[in-house]
Length: 126
Image (cartoon, rainbow, N blue to C red; front, side, top):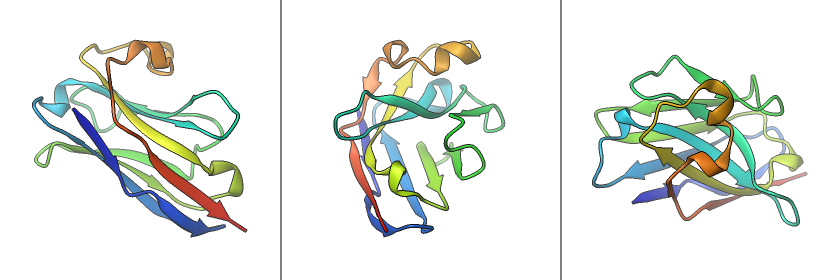
């Protein structure tokens, strides 16, 4: 099971850190990603990291340079640090995990993830 947390309301330009906790599995052996879904829109890819690698991270163009995905292997956690937040970042954010080490393009596809957290709402107000 995955448990996402850390959402909330923040003003434009602010920061939040989302957390994704895994129970019952070693998170470092999984591909882990964050997706988001804004009201009335489809779920979209935000960021992903490959198994056993804190360096191999991938981002949607819309968040590149502002968001950082990171693993804490000892704590079995994955984080999404979000800086310079914009109103268009408002969405429910989901963490997802897959036991496979997908090629880069496949990391961006929600259908490739087997486990999903419940979502945490991020609201960016101007």
